[in-house]
Amino acid sequence: MGDEPNLSPAAFGRSFRAFLEAAVAGQEVEEPPFVVRLRGHLGADPRGLPILSEQFSAIEHPNVQAALDAWVSADGRSADLLGMSAEQKRYQGLGFSDLITPPGGGLMGDRAPRPGPVDYVNVPVAHGRVRACVQHGLYLLGDGEGPLAVLVRSTGEHHGPVPQIHIEVMSAEPETASAFLAEIRAGMLLHNVYRGQLLSLGNPHGPFGEGGAMVEFLAIPEIERDAVVLPEGVLERVERHTAGFAAHAGKLLAAGRHLKRGLLLHGPPGTGKTLTAMYLVGRMPGRTTLVLSGGSYGLVSPTCELARNLQPSMVILEDVDLVAEERGMGPMGENPLLYELLNEMDGLAEDADVIFALTTNRPDLLEPALAARPGRIDQATEIPLPDAGCRRRLIWLYAKGLDLRLEDAKTVIDRTEGVSASFIKELLRRATLFSAEAGEDLVVTDAHVSEALDEMLLAGGTLTVRLLGGGPPPSEASPEWYEEGPPGGGLG
Image: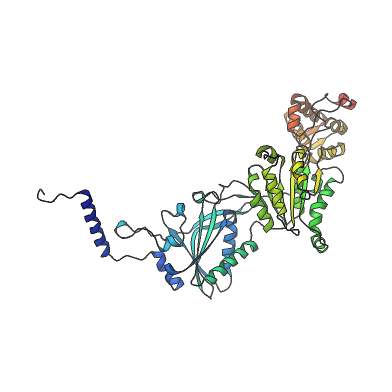
């Protein structure tokens, strides 16, 4: 040992490298597994073939899958679906280049991706239903004219703020790859899972796998016309501007009239603006409806894009006054998000059968923006606090399922002047509770309703009334009020 020469670190490194190179040079290097599979399917070395790729928003994932399934199921076509095993798959999103020219090998270890299980993710496709969609998979396809290899992969937040679905197509003929992608795009529209549904776009880190955009499917409400209690003529005007245009779309287009239209429903909270909008959803079956509210306000553009692609459609923007209040005004008093919505409406063709329905408690906040862009909202309809006739109808509407024995309905109607429909609904709920506490077999009488009114108007105070949609205090020139109920009480 003492007679061996001392090597410097640099000299030792050079010697060890020479040893490794000599060892690898004498070793037979195995081809990556996917190169072998692709060469056998395509009849050519895949490392020399062109790759054509296209990407879609993760919102389109179920539609991409529907189009792929439709392509495979057509007559004369065959498909073999392979998965892949690789440690970097979930973080890097393996593409064709990773499959055919993997890093590593030799004495340092074979890190080439290998065939493995196909990765799927469950994606909602209807209210209460999901579909298993390929998240990472390689299709080896044949249609009798030429073989294709199609790689489907998803990328999440590791590759940017907007999750994507990538399709890469490898073929010996570039025209074959182009034709395949064109057929997929057409199939995505033809088999679109969102068509005719009630949808809400939401959290961009939802259940579409790795940070995918979320589409929530809502149950289409079954609202009877009698359940929409509005003053005479109001609902008829709303129906004419929405369902009426839809029913006569062909005649209107033939006469050179445009179909796109905007409706603004305004009025105090709790009067039935959202209920009216939801009634319209059921009134026009087959129409795709997209709802924007709360955290989804920032998704105006993708929502409107879906509405354009899936017409006939309707976009409901709830409480649009909150856009002005929460998002803030621009330097010139403009609201960027509201103007984005108006710009989207401008971008529609005149013959687009798209309805925009906006609801608001504060039309005064919207008026400057709407007045600056006339014609985008072509009908504004007030949904007012219910008058005496409407309050009578609401009492009996919300009494369904109850044994309501109301002998003096006029007193209740008078005492509820200036309240909203939400207030009356809560009134009957509390009256039912008083009946239950009294152990009277849920027979709701005048006494129970009166007790509930006293609690809501007196004990609850003005704030309770306002929270339930009540208006300002009534005028002192209301002698009936003082005879039959508490003064003031926060009602109008």
